[in-house]
Structure formats: C-alpha cells, structure tokens
Length: 283
Image 1 (cartoon, rainbow, N blue to C red):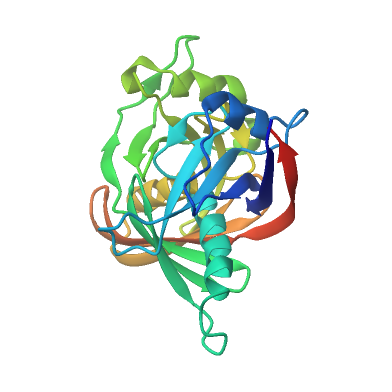
Image 2: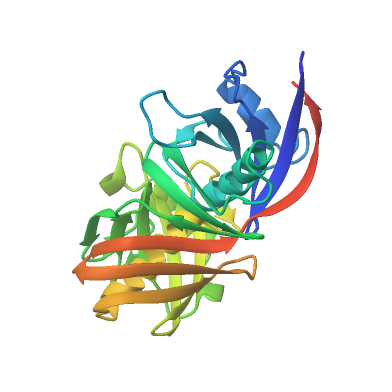
C-alpha cells in the first residue's frame, strides 16, 4: 500500500483527482483509478488527471493523461484540460520569472496538442479541429423512443447532440445510456448531449458521459460539440460565440469560426478551473 499525494479540482462542477507524475514513476491500473474516483471509498471524482513531461520531440510544455471514473483512458476532456492547465501553470510558476507570470502553456493529449490561456481562475483552451460532423437523420432507440433530430461531432472524443424543447423533462440516464451504447456508435460508444436553445447564441446542456456512465455537472468537449451543432443549425457564418449553461449552473463559452456545414476552425473553450483541496490517499 502506498501514500499518494493528490489535488482535487473542478471545472464547472466536473471534478478531478490531479496527480503530479512529472517523474513518470507513478503507474496506476484501472482498479486503482476506480478506487480513487469512488465517492464513498476514495477521493471521489469524474476522472483522474496525470501531469507528465512532454515527449522529447514535442514542442509542448507538458503531457496530459486523462482517465475516466471507470478506469479507462480517454483521448481528451475539456473541463479536465482547463484544470490541468491551471495546475500546470502553478507548477511552472515555481521556475518561471516571478515578474513575468505565465499567461499560457501547451500540452499533449491523445487528441493533439492543446494551447491554454490562463486568466486568474479562468482558462481558455484552443481546441483541436472537430471531425466527423454529420446529421444522423434521426435516432431510433430500442425502447421505441425516436429522436427525429440527432447529430454527431467529434471534439476530441465522440458526441451525439440531440435538440429537445425542454432539457428539464429529459430522463438523461436511461436515454443517454441507450445512445451511448447504440449499435451505430459501436464498439467505442459515444457521449450523449441534450440541448435546449435559449437564443441564437445561448443553450442549456445536459450530458451523459461515457466512462463516467452517468450524467455529469459539466462536460467541456460536450459543451463544445453542442455549441457547434447549435451554430450549424442556426446557419452561423464566420466567427461566433455560444454560451452554454451546464448542469452545475456555470456557463462555458465556446468560440469558433464556421467555414461550412459541420466545418469549424479556431474553436475555443473558456470557463472556470478551481482548486478544491489537496491531501493524501492510501492505495
């Protein structure tokens, strides 16, 4: 059994255990990740973030590894990446010139190199270019539930976006799980997002997250996918910003430049990244 120092952070309510692995001596298997994320027997979190040095041939400052609460490693996590960036910025401050505090940094992820801009408690990410955007032509679920409108977009991880008239009436867990495991997205599955349009530049979002296997208070890549689909449905031309209110009550801001149907450049994700507490846990 080992004693493991950790930091707890949250991004708009999406919470994480953050571990400093710059020595790359820490190895965690899936059961250890599950124990850390257990809200009754562990620290409790939606996922685990490892801060590691960038590869020798990478121009990035750090490398981010992200594990969902089920122990599986994922390509990217938007809210986690903001928390990662703020913590990495704190680590960098120990060696940077104090008279010139760092305002940005970059880090490797499985979805590509992410650039982060630090502004106090807020972080804005330059996201990787979305891929595989398409109209699904509706989505039929096994329980005879049919969504006439459904869209797919990969914003680092796969997302289905379903517009609904009122997100408060959506039974997110069973419907989200049915979408997550739908045969159209096998074998890896997808995240499921339900959006309510408030205006042309504002939506409300609820997300069922793959790997957490339930609804979370926020999902950064889901907010990004939802905002871009909403922008596409509204025929945005050129640059724009959509505000996304998530389950925690926080608002994430998605910037973009729409260049064509389901085609976006210069995508950004901005929002809070908060330190909660630090401690030690026995594993």
